[in-house]
Amino acid sequence: MAEELAFLSRTRTWDAFYAEAKIAEFRRSIYLEAFGEEYPADAATDGYITCSELREMVEALQVGRGQKIADLGCGRGGPGQWVAEATGASLVGVDFSAVALEQAQARARSRNLPACSYRRGSFQATGLDSSSFEGAISVDVIWAIPDKPAGFAETARILKPGARFVFTDWERDLSPPGYPAPVSDHRPLLLEAGFEIERHKPWPQADSLRRTFYERMLARQGELTSGLDAKTAESNLREARAWLGLLDGVDYLRHSRRVLVAARKPA
Image 1 (cartoon, rainbow, N blue to C red):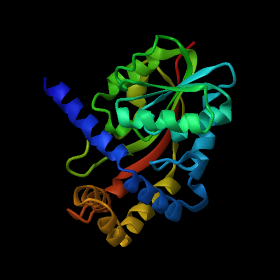
Image 2: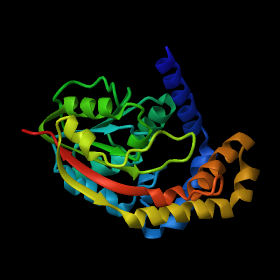
Image 3: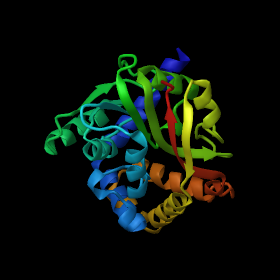
Image 4: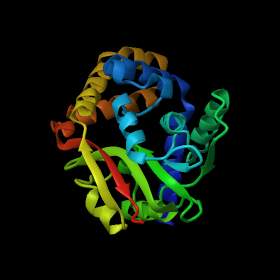
């Protein structure tokens, strides 16, 4: 019962985030300001993925036309659609937010991407068939998964032998109060799920861009508070203050390492 209530709470939180168009527009303007040419504007992303990371994800996946990839925790779908277009593979996006899925579907229709489809599910329970995908991706989602071993096991289940799981996330020694417990290294969890590690690449430049993003957000907080309801504005400002160490004096970004990981299900 407690797990079900926690899941419903997370769903409501993310539905509310995706339903607020103004915050998406505001955050994207700051991403563009902070990331410059590294911001994948054509993917309309809500996260910290960079153009360089997307290109490396495509290279690491090793998929092409006639093959199928899963986008786990797809959100509004932008980065996954970018990867699908770059590889020529078809894509199935999975997310527990009905609001995000509606937006992902609408975006696929507007961009004439019939090979991109979406369904409701969670990282730990995708509802996808076993051994049915030639690849899987996840962009900046794993930190928020409550049961990461179960999520990695589910990913391994849906992949065909020899297929790859490529994701971006953070490895952390500390996280601010109220955030999920940190994972300092994903590799032991992936090995436990039966994967072979093909690459584990830190992206320190992406970490510095994230710091710039938060600093710019605080510099423009007057614009944020005047254009949004107080609860939404404060939630975003608290995120920036928490990670920059302005709430308790701990600079949590110094204890966070962004990584791109590619793992292969053995043939």
